[in-house]
Image (cartoon, rainbow, N blue to C red; front, side, top):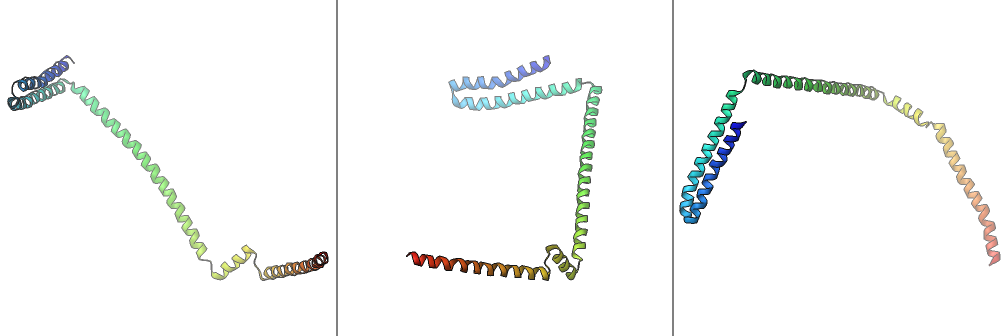
Length: 170
């Protein structure tokens, strides 16, 4: 950890050098500041990145191979666990889709059986379900005519005396 702090400090110092030079040159001459500060900035960036890259390689070289292997094994085990979980989810989804397919097949078979009924059978079923037989239709027609005639008679019986009474008052 101590080396990492040292490298970070070195990178910060290397990055600060071009900015200090640029400020100094701006105070003297702008043209020289641009010409000198740009290559210095690029060189300091390259130096800092190579130092950091070297420190990363050094860290990897110092790492215990047994620990690296253990970490890789843990990652592989996690990947297998996740794959097993996903496989179980896929099996559940597949079972649900299969059940839905079976239900649709059963409904289609039922619809096919309903469609196979002949027209005469369908008409008979309709009459049974709605209760519309010829006798019930005739009985309903007679009842409607009876209500109509009763309404005419009652209205005539009431309107004549009322009309006479209104005429006598006026």
